[in-house]
View: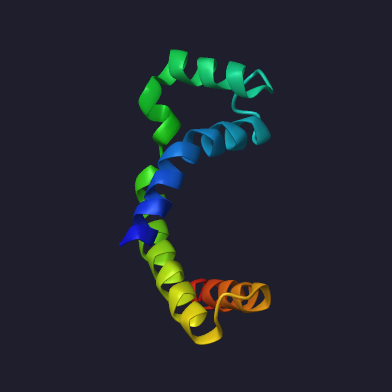
Length: 99
C-alpha cells in the first residue's frame, strides 16, 4: 500500500544517516562529523556498508508503516477531519501499530 511505500522511501533515505550516527556514537569512526564519517565508511568498506542492516529494518518497517496508515485512515473516517480527531486518530493508530 501507499503507507508501506512511504515507509520504504523514508528508510532508504535515512538509513545511511542512522548508520553513521550509530558508528559515531559507538566510536567506530575516528571523525565525529557526518560528512567525514560517510567518507571514512565508504573509503574503508564501500557504499554498501551504509546500508548494512537494512534488510532487518524493512522486515518491521513495511508491515508496521502500512498498518499504521491503514488504521489512521480508518480512525479518521470515524472521527472526521478536525484537529483533535486527527490527533487522536494518529495516537490510536500508532499505539495499535506499535503492538
